[in-house]
Length: 187
Image (cartoon, rainbow, N blue to C red; front, side):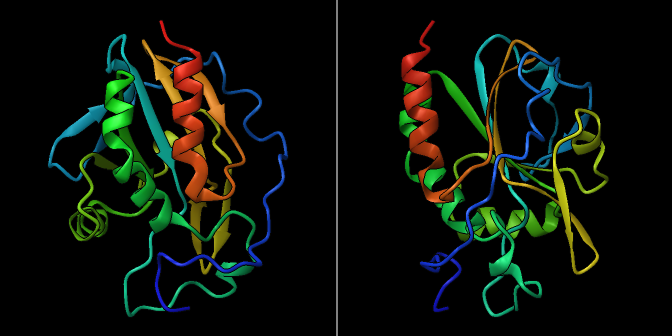
């Protein structure tokens, strides 16, 4: 693999196992998470505008190996390309009135390096203690002793989960899917 941004042609497709069926309509839990901008964010109190939160397992670091069997785990590979797709279409999301956050269980220092390296115009939130992950029962998987969030995207509006994209595949098309949904659900 030449780059963390390249996706193998034979990535396994994740299946919809129903793990997110309970989320639409749920109130967002009152949990404060640290962001790569050095502030704390309470996702339950973001106001009436739409917020897109793309949750992903973990981003890789150039020159460091990926977890064992990473490419064989359905939905695991593609965090960097997904982040870049949200970056590249951030103006379209803003035009549609949506703010964007990334969210993973990696610590803020790790995420800050990624945000700087990829020039992300939005904040990444750290759920290193799994508080946000566990409160609404987001789907997870474990690899190399790490408990990671399965790839999903939440649309939040006025303190509630309005829509869920799950499973997300391929990760590079998620942003376009979100934009299409937002265009079809203008208020």
